[in-house]
Image (cartoon, rainbow, N blue to C red):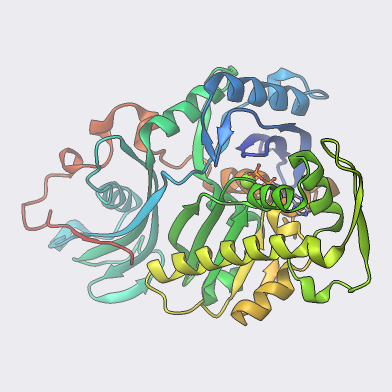
Length: 419
Ligand SMILES: Nc1ncnc2c1ncn2[C@@H]1O[C@H](COP(=O)(O)OP(=O)(O)O)[C@@H](O)[C@H]1O
Ligand SMILES: [Mg+2]
């Protein structure tokens, strides 16, 4: 009988650290064993700023998740990475003149994929190399060439790069909690796992996870991730703008935003009023909810324009037919779908993790898409090769030294930059 498998996800966000522990039973059934959500300290716009503070937060969140299950269950961790140090490119790698080598094997594809590791700038490291399509003897759009016979195999891959120090710090934070890292996963890729439908991925879709300090964008085309980027602006900026507009504390502005805020002033009834409590000697005031919505509308429109700018940078003139999917805590604000529709006129969906049986209701919120997605990523990619920085030995992965004895011509590589 197949054994149960345990998974741990640690989503390190600017606003909160979420740990989720789960068990997948022999029949594939998912059971969430524990969840720990702790306010973040030491994260600035998605990246680790103060490692000691982050270590303590991750520890608190893991302990909360382990409350009812004991420490024994803590296994390899899937942890998220965000921040505007993230960049991407799409590469093409090929092997020619396979001749009588025979059918294309999994090992061959692994090697081909490892060959897709690009030359890195100093301080850069590879976070993901995701195959997005194969070509066998001129036949394009091959999804899985294993078992096919061919003499020329080409793979196109989506490569995500990050700052080596940031990635190492993330590993350090997890390891300081006596856990090992199974994989670091790009935050938007995790969110996509929990929210995007197969149809959306096939049609092409833009996913934006609006967190506290970042908006993490990922574009899918023909079923695969094709472009990813991180915009260093998120929901906290709406709060800050509101606190300036209201001359209130940030804490109060956050409460106001969540309780009464909207990013679509036109849809707020003109006669609705809210009370702004007294602050720094100023008496309490009454303002219209529409007035409250104005700065929120301005900032959210700005974020949406930045998302659109990334879509253009990716080389697309317009949004793909799957439209725009928004998730992350920042997407929970009232009026967002209406605003997108008015601004961009494209299909829009505010998404949270769904369609996953066994998922507790408190995790079915946009703010938990990445944490849930990390688990799903782990379940789907269990046992796959890990990025080079975790293996420690760079000579083993990627780079020319690793090629498998092909001639110079066969080693020729073409790298295609996105955008
Ligand atoms: N109901 C809500 N309405 C408006 N904003 C919200 C709501 N819930 C959460 N947010 C905002 O979402 C952001 C946090 O999103 P989250 O995805 O949890 O962040 P992170 O992943 O960066 O920790 C904060 O800026 C918070 O103000
Ligand atoms: Mg997040």
